[in-house]
Image (tube, rainbow, N blue to C red):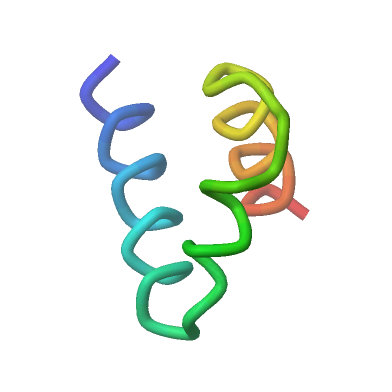
Length: 44
């Protein structure tokens, strides 16, 4: 569980660094959808 939280945190920080977090926050998706997509992309 700790690894999942760390990976999610890293994904959010990366989005903030590249400046796309604002676009994500106004996109009409649920929080769990965002987390699942980011985790899937990290494992590719």
